[in-house]
Image (cartoon, rainbow, N blue to C red; front, top):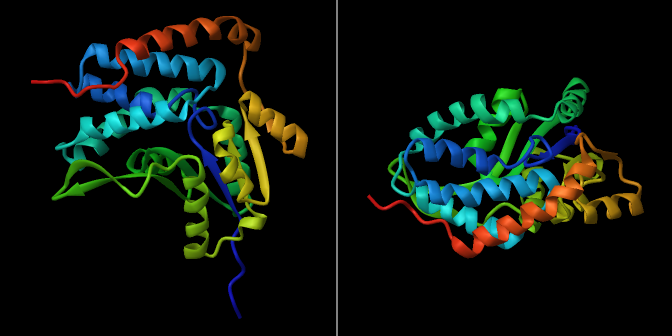
Length: 257
């Protein structure tokens, strides 16, 4: 008799599980260890502020920052990043967790359903967060390594947009998951392929386009943010500063020794 297919809940990380960007938190840990300089951190800071305030995520910006981060870790030991990841979790990720999202995840676990994280951030960081929270596993961008050191390249593609849908479909084949009976949670319209790949899409702290889609299709909406009017007032200022910073520093550069 074949095993019954599993029901799984997939959670995006940035602004869905945590306030802001996991890559930004990782960049702070990298900066503290001398991976790059103060000027480089400015772009991460402004991008994270904009994202916390309005949930805005530009795909070209994601590609640039992810690519820059890969170049920064080139030649560094994999164990070094994992050690740094534990410190980053304790200092930055844990205080930024959305309690409401954690409660949703715990509801799934209490029903015997698996909970997986899915993110464009490095899979090592995603796995670490999942392990610390007692989740089932994680999917993330995979960086290539040789002899325990990062090469500065990625395996496959960055895990965002349609790549997330492909990833969970592959996981479903591998682990006997019933996607039609599974859940997906995200804050961004960029994750619509992920949400459309499951039978029970949900949105958390949605951006404007995702909120419109959720309302149109009667998807449940959870918003754990506060001070929405403040965000509306201050967001244009943050966007302007981020644009200026992008002009001054369009691509993060590895620190020269």
